[in-house]
Length: 235
Image 1: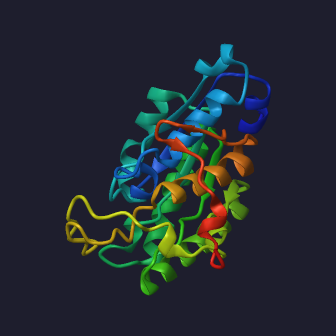
Image 2: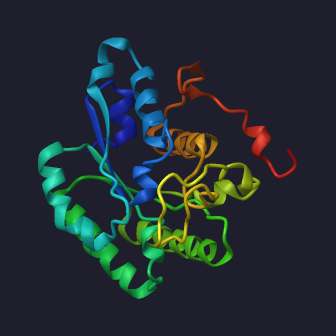
């Protein structure tokens, strides 16, 4: 079976479903990383085949693997994707992180994916600002990497892509909807949602590492290619 990268290179029809929680849905920042990926897919080949390439964001705020399992096969049946991109980076932390339970629930989703015989790629969450939550995201990174090794899945390590970045430069958004779970009050600093620069960084890594394409350089409308040097710790 051709990989998703090979299908893109061959100009074939490609439909990708992105599954996960708020890390995937990114409801408060546009363009999100999935918006960037969609644009990159449209612009990575001949204009005549652009309509054949589609990113479907099926992320749901606060969704856990257990929740996703209940609708996973329905989404697969409805969209018939060529690949699934899967990750949970926020919801596993609340109300508290239970590594064993999360790992078991994730296995259930991956088992369902295996039965559908559709390629799955796992990507690690990006690190959050606060210490305890940041430790959880590092643990999640290790879990995804191990699952990928055990099951022969593609793994994209986003967590360590942020190692040389000043995180305060990618978490600059303000809270627009109060969230008791995350203890985020209206108007305060949003420590969960990446800003436009952070969205671009995620998309850039997924595009090059997994899809084998590059993000377009643009300043059209909301799509503005950031100067990533400005996010470095020494910037």
